[in-house]
Length: 298
Image (cartoon, rainbow, N blue to C red; front, side, top):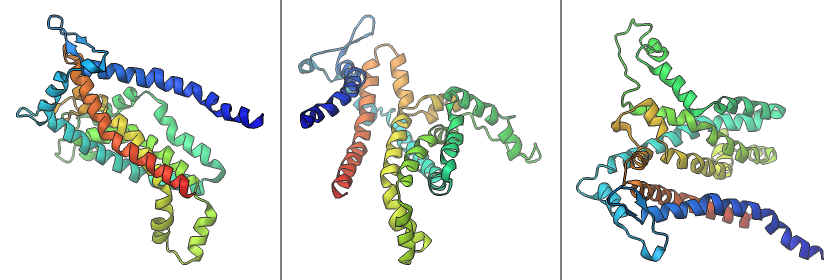
């Protein structure tokens, strides 16, 4: 009797999550597919989704493909720029978050919860308000230029808010760094102190301890944090709009946003969204397989 009740316990507890995934992920994603592989009303330029997969058309996808790899490939610079911005921002978030997460996990002791709360609390403020604060700081007469020019003594003029790639990458780092910090802390907190002591007793130096023990055991946290921030970064358009407002720093998210706002291009926006998903699907599958192998070994 006990085995029978246990057999149905976990599926029952997991049922709400499965219903949530179906209603708020699979169904909307299917709608996106139907719009992407649908047609466009020739008069009102509104999207006409095709609900039957057997009748899907690829005209909208072909348009996006031509704009990526055809003669007029004006989508391609924004796509390559997005990959570059995201790679730099993810690497910077990792470099910033790793020592903070390690200190919190190893040395904060009973105050680790307080330290985490203080680190994450500023990010409870609206993303828009935080970007607006950076706009005030980075204006030509703002605090940053005042410091750089030593109060106007150095004749240097830096326009941070007009197509400056550094500003956009900095905004991405600032906006998403806590989402790298938390998975790293969770991974580093699981490392047993006795394991570190054993490595030291065996003669491991500080660098060897990091290279052979800490870094390998923190890989799940690194991969989880990378995936957690890469997906929203790839679709981010708000940061570039707020801190640049220039086509020279536009990203995939800006292309999607522009396509949605343009009549008759909703299908192209969906095709770009599918492109982002396919790109991120590869590391997600790798992460899932890595975790599965780690569980089998343990």
